[in-house]
Image (cartoon, rainbow, N blue to C red):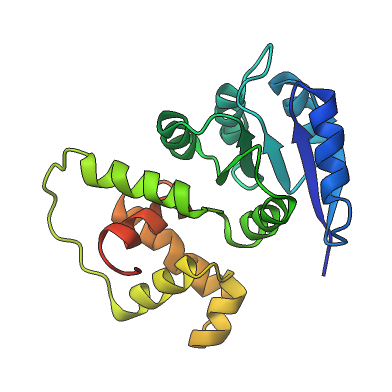
Length: 213
């Protein structure tokens, strides 16, 4: 199994050093660089090609929100896990809609941060219970413009359920006897059919519509 390369972006060097130390006992991940602001992240992204970026929100020169937007303009694949002191629903919703793959509070235990890196890299998202509840409340509160009822096929429901169980395309394919490429095609079709932007949107849809509990 290949090692997951991650980048730490935070304007406090002490925090960056402490975080790298806390994660250093996991042989499955490796820190390839660190940045103090969003502009440095954009520069290092293209040179170091990390798989996952741990990204603070409040940074000088270019903050985390703008950095997420800029990264998503050119790189849809790198996984962006926000790690911040702000436990604010507005930030969570805004960042997920902009293309973040996960959201952690800075007092999270090292084991949860490691899990977030692994899970976001392999499945495309990491939601703890708090973030899941925030996203679900957002969907429930939203003024719904009534759309024609969307019907999913049994195969689409199978794939959606397994995505919510954090299975990779390869793992899903093995369970339902399809190639990983076919699974990715079904996933892309679901994103288009449901009018969501990414895997996070699929999970929110599944929560709202009772596909998963």
